[in-house]
Image 1 (tube, one colour):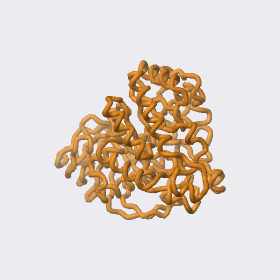
Image 2 (image 1 turned 90 degrees about the horizontal axis):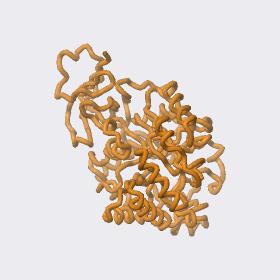
Image 3 (image 1 turned 90 degrees about the vertical axis):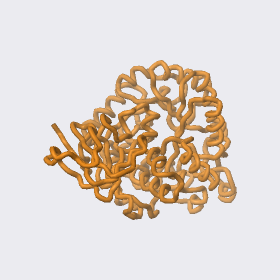
Image 4 (image 1 turned 60 degrees about the vertical axis):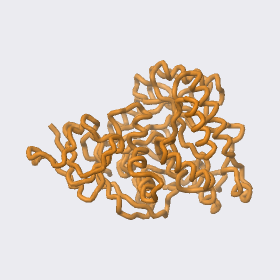
Length: 428
């Protein structure tokens, strides 16, 4: 029997709206109690003193590029697991854009096998490609991919180009009960875009993507979702127009959900004027009015998850001219601190803010055993000092790549202990 008790901390469980001093009792990988004080018969259990700290559910990221197989020079399962634990993430949804693409059982099994050997316990949930090679042309064997261990299916880096194919994807996903993830972009408007369409793109003379590209795609996919009778989850929503379209669809009864990245809640297209390739992300950084709309949407619950979109890139992809740089930023080790800052700025209350990283993504995945501090839940727990100031320095991070858009930014909050299924994670 394995026992662990966390004492003296402020236990915050957004799902149960709990925010008070409690102890946490963990036995054989599960939470078995949250008493005001641990019973005397737990004195021999291993103790973690969390006095003055927050005790939170382990964080969940719905969109993480793990690098393995195929791009291990950028990231691999061991380094992404270290980065996850450092940032408080205990569960990662691994995007299907591996090399080869995760569109067959063999790739899924390779990812899961490697994660069990070198992942240190971090829960990696493979997300399968909805179409072969993410081409949008031919359906994958979703039932077989689910049986192999995939937790959802995805269109990858772009929206499904053909509405008929999207309907088929959703109908197949419905039959095998798998969530469907997509991104919103109309390729006729967004292909090749480097910046958000606005004054900055005009001033810099670079190809740009209008907000309407996202809104058009969200509306189309939302209506196809109603036709097929299966939900759509939109990833990395970035515009006010997209938010407004989501509201319209929700009012019409569509089963749509959405997540947003930390960097789209923080930066604007003005941050691209220095041509720092770390600001080259997809979708591009938007305007201040878009940032304001996204912050409002997480505050009122329209957007129910913050996903890091952790996308490591090496210097080969980033130390080039802006227009040739590959998009993406690391995010696992800064996301919680960004949310803490949003809570401090009263953009969101503490429960709604932390729900975006815990029970919100768990609900999208249909996992009631994750993202919660309740009896019987998986003992994924983190201990956080919410007051520790830090200046982001990518050279100090656990991730293998150094392309962090938050480089040099002063944030608050430090993860001190990460527990996965009752075991304390030890980083390299």
